[in-house]
Amino acid sequence: MSYANWLESHAQKHQQIISKLLKKNYTKDQIVNYFRYENISKQEPNFCPLFQQKTKCHDIEELNCYFCGCPHFRFYDIPQDNIHSFCAIKSPDGEQKCYNNVYHQDCSHCIIPHKKQYILQNYTHNWLNKMKLCRKET
Image (cartoon, rainbow, N blue to C red; front, side, top):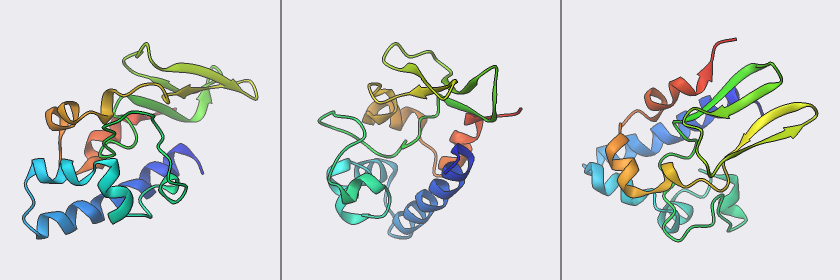
């Protein structure tokens, strides 16, 4: 699945959950808490393919999945100068990995968007609005 396809598909899943929670009058804090790995992996087993394997994408104790897909991740539909994706803030916990002569951002050791404080500071009901900067024009 391409980055662009994942972004659109995940945005739909995310919006369905947010709509459901807003209909129940959840507050911003309650919504963010709903996305804690321990809860969302049970309540929304199809939100992430890793949930069915009972594993996390980031090995941290208080993983929050609200920003599954980091707002700082950037990608090109067609690689530019052999770069397919990168980190806009150059997080020291991320790295570039080369696959078939094309570089992709590996965010597996970065936890910036998975902490509650970051999510509350950057919260929006419309996840895609926050994520739209991820797709770079080619």
